[in-house]
Every structure is written in C-alpha cells, then in structure tokens.
Length: 442
Image (cartoon, rainbow, N blue to C red; front, top):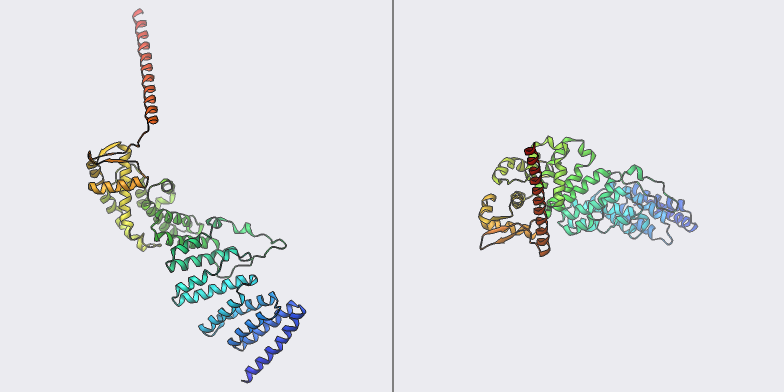
C-alpha cells in the first residue's frame, strides 16, 4: 500500500509538470514528462495503472502529437515484457484505442494490430485474426517502408487463405504489383525533400525484397491451387525460379524446375502455354533432369502419344512429387494429365487429317466413340480446335467453314498456279524442240 501511495504521488507530481510544459508549448519537456510517467508504472510493474495513464495522457486537452507518439512508441517496448497473455492483450488494446484515427501513429497502430493478430492466430482464432488485419490499409501509409507494407499485405493474404476466404485473398493480393520485386533498392534510397514524409526504417523482423518475392509467389500458388489454374501456378514457379538466391542453389532450383515442367504439361494448350513450353525447353538446367526434358519434348512433338506407355514411364516421378518441396500436384492432377494427352493427340490428328471417321479416331486415341465425341466437343467449345461431327456418316471434319469469298479466292489462286504450270511446261517443250532441231542440222 505504501508503494502504491508513493507511485501515485510521483505520478501526480509528474502530471503537474506535464500540464505546465504542455500549456507552455514545450514539446521536449512534455514528451519527457509523459514518458517518465510510463517508465515509473513499468518499473513498479503496475500494468493497470500504466494502461490508465496512457489513456489519461492521450486525452488531456491540447495534448501534443509528439508526446502521444513518444508514449505509444515507449509503451510498445513493454509489450514483450508483460507477465502474462491477458496483460499483454490489454496493453495492446489500450495502445490500439489511443492510436486509432491518428495519422502520426498509424505505423505503430499497424504493428500493434499485427501483434494482436498473431496472438489470435496462436489461439486458433484465424477468422478474428484475418478480420483484425483487414482493418488496416497500409498501402495509404506514406511514411511506412515499402518492404514493411508488402510484408503486412502478404500477412493479410496468408490469413485469408488460412481462413479459406479466397475472394478477399485475391482482392488483397492485387494491392501488390509484381513489378515492385524487380526494383533495385540501392537505387531507390533518395534524400527526402523538404515538406515530404520521411520514410521510416522497417522493423527488424521484416524480410528482404527477394524473400518477400518468394513468399508472395508461394501464397499465389496456394490461391491458384484452389481453382487448379495450372498455367498461373507454373508462372508463379517460374518467377520463384528466376530469384538469384534460388538459381544459385541446385537443392532449391531442381524441385522448382520439376514443378514448372509438371504444371506446363498439366496446363491447357494455348499461346501462353506454348511460349512457356518452348522457353523452358531451351533452359540449360533441364539437362540436369533429362526425364523431364523427354516429357516436355513428347508433348511438343506432333506425334500421337500412347497414354499407358507415358504413364508407366513417369508414374514414379509423378508420385515422388509429394516428397518434394511444394508438395503434391493436386487431387485431380493424374486425371488432368490424361486429359492433356488426349487433347494433344486430337490436335496431332487434326494437323494430319482434314476428314477422319469417328471409329478410326477412337482407335488412334485408345478411347470409345462417346468419349471421343465428349473431348472433341469440349475442345471446340474452348476454341482450341475447329471441328464438325457428321453423326449419321460418323465422320469428323477438321476444316474450318469457308465463305463464298474464300472459296472464290482459293479457286482463283489454284487457277493461277495451273496456268503458271502450263506456261512453264510449254516453255520447256519449246526449248527441247529447238535443241532437237539444232542437233539434226548439225
């Protein structure tokens, strides 16, 4: 009781000093008096009094911004030294309420909410943690370091993914432009001009830009895996593969390159997939994993692939992926791989045949007629192929329909070629005749 009375007397004396300095407009002395009060409460381990004094000092009439900022920053140092979790949460909530709506302590508030969200996550309250993090829009903070902003948004995305809130995760991920990871931080450090906000140094636990790039793409892989968007997953792995620290270490780039190959093969055929396919085949590092070079070569060569032979060759590698970094390729990956092989085979047939019977096509694809019709229809709907099925005749036509102008142009072109050939033939006959006559005269 005697100790409590002594503390109250000391706080009372300092409050009077703080009042006089505040009214006199002495910034340094007001800040010193406010921080000394908090220090006294901390040394006495009077956590309840500390919370009360923070609220009291922040609400005093005409309180200076610098004093509130100094108080919040000092009290934040005490968070990790609290005796128990309840005291810690109470202190964070007090500081959060004091800093709410104040631009000059917005960075401190963001860091406080991040700490509180981490505690909620440890208590398995993922939903509450995600909602807490979404209260803060760090992209509007001018004084916050770029890396800290990115790290904060990535934490928001991660919690949304953990909470299975994929729509909000996508909205938050769009706040980060992937080009920001390509910037050179050494060139960006400029001296702040007069009147501009001074950008604060990021917190000690914030990763570097290349590390943030890797975290960003790993989170995007999690997001795209939800919808089995294989091409986007492949592009994410490609971006991770290009990180210098990954490319220098074979233990890191070999699993990533394997994933790139698998997801390329699993992606539906289009111009983007074809471009990535060709660029990956040109990669010299692919010689380290020749099995995968063969896989990519097979799916780019215009020849019909036998599914059973392909599956028997690559089944072990496919099942081994679950033991590699990044985990399995997905629940539907084996089915989708078979589907891609069928689509590849149909494209090969369409290149070499203009018309083919359904029975013959079914034999080439090792499928029954109903399945062939189903896959053909899906490819036509997705505009990967132009085809028409004549069911009564049982014939598939792969030629695109021509209008009257195209037919006329084609006829004119063919006629021109024919006349050209006739002219060349006549010239050759005339030449041979002249040579023969000359030989007779001789």
